[in-house]
Length: 380
Ligand SMILES: *Cc1c(COP(=O)(O)O)cnc(C)c1O
Image 1 (tube, rainbow, N blue to C red):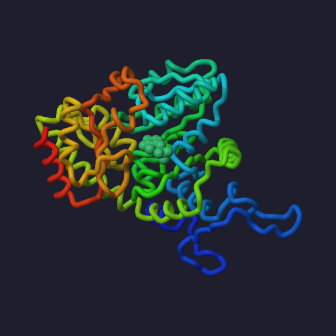
Image 2 (tube, helix red, strand yellow; image 1 turned 90 degrees about the vertical axis):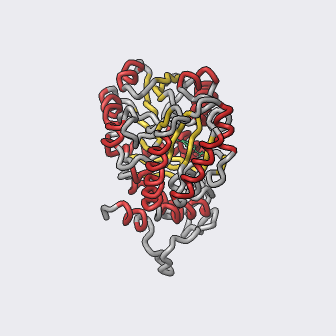
């Protein structure tokens, strides 16, 4: 089964063996009856293995063209899983521009436990190479980045990682497996906040780690079971249901976002529009090369925090809220919301200003979204 939509609907989701149920059942159990002493294959305890979770893990692995999938209780738990591959004394080269919560985990938890980090502008792969030290073990990035929509050339980064025998990890949350597959570009590990596009309905928290490397898979699996941040069967079931429409939703997000980004880029009141689908995006050519679409996230510079406040206060279809990737449109003010934990000097360097607004374009009717955007613009 090669096609994305077919895989999304069928992989890991064969009719259930006992009853033939077409939808994978919610196996709400913590333990399993064992046949006799020392014989229990393969189900023993539900932190270790759950059939509903296995279905999701197989499915997500297939969508990322990977061999092994692991689901976690949140995107952050997935990130912790991938970063469990480094220890005290190891060095990580990470992108300077990333989800605020990832930066907080790196700088406040891992760094305090002795993992060293260098944050570099990964728009230029040479910066990655220059930051590598004798104790470097892992390269970590997002592309496009949150919220500046900068891109990282994944083929170049994976080539550097391979040459230096480092583990490469990519947070693919913004593109979802439908628009970008980092493993195909030589990246070792891809991860997701499934809370966003994979879940897609703003009703579940989840995460996933996928790889094709058996040795790394073994270590992630050991971590997943030992640390235990696994999702419950209902959350997993919601994600399985969501993933079936991922392709349709991503197409709709993409189509709406392109129209809105193009419209905003023509408005004098908006100083800058950050969207990789615009020909004016400095990395538009790379975007076309490594992604199959441009996604639903657009950041805009309104000029000041006051303008950002006025713009957001007039929106009625876009809801002011953290998160992204749901069917409903959301608007976020990174400085006071998602990136509040990033120090102000770092935010200034990255261009995360008080005037910056991030739109997560939903799949509502484009005419209604446009009307809403115009209401916001009128208020500036
Ligand atoms: C939201 C998000 C995360 C964290 O995921 P949770 O599910 O909220 O724990 C990580 N990376 C990116 C890019 C995100 O947008």
